[in-house]
Structure formats: structure tokens, C-alpha cells
Image 1: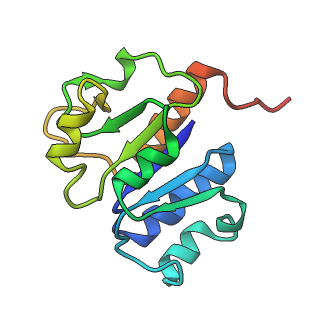
Image 2: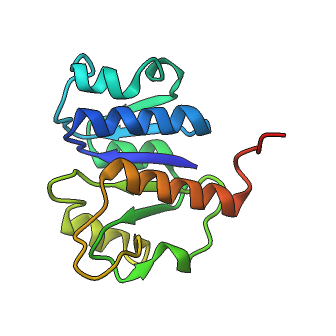
Length: 153
């Protein structure tokens, strides 16, 4: 599995997701303009010493990203997607793509990814999950389905 963040804005979320990727051996792709610096104290604190354990890739544009990961299947996550992530079968090598915290993935990108857009089920009236929580929920479900993470003995 790969985890990708399109224009992430909040350093603490990126740091938490870096920790998630380090704990699962999942490569992390950061796409477009970042809303923070890796030197930001919140990014350092949330990621702790995990940043150096992450296979990190930077892409200037979304086109650069797709060229680098082809032919992998990309699943775009959005609170507005019609299909639940419980309804799909993930495959090894799939990409889980999340948008910026304040606005989510751009509509044009969601349209281009259709029918590979998914939401995480929530109770009515709930706007969204925190980005790092959503990434963790989705990644662990994808890993569970694909047997991609060894269990402790």
C-alpha cells in the first residue's frame, strides 16, 4: 500500500501520518504545496523520530505523482463520496489518497478518480474525521484485507 497526501496543511497531522507510515512500513507521498515546513515544531513533535524511518516521496504536481506511481490504482477519500470504503476490495499496491484538511480533494480530481472515490462511514451530522484518523482507519482496513502487515506473536 501507499499513502498519499495532496497539499496537506497541518504539520501535526503530517507528523502523525508519518508515524503511522513508519509503524506499518507504508511509503508516504506528499503532493503539491505543503502548508507547513518539516522544521515546524508541530511536525517534528507529532512525527517524533519517525520521519527518518519513513520512505518519503515528494511530488511537485499531481501529474508528477501519477507518473511516479503508475500503474497503481488510486483510491481518493472524500466525505462527499457516495461509496463506502467497506464496499471495495483493496489490492496490494493500491494508493490511498487524501486531500487537504480545510477543503478535501479538489472536485476535478474526485471526478477524474471516479468510481475510485470512497468515504469512511460516520453518523449523520458528522462533518469529517481528522485527516490522520481517516488515514489510519483506511490504511489499516486496506492492510487487513491484503494481509499486508505481520502480526505480533
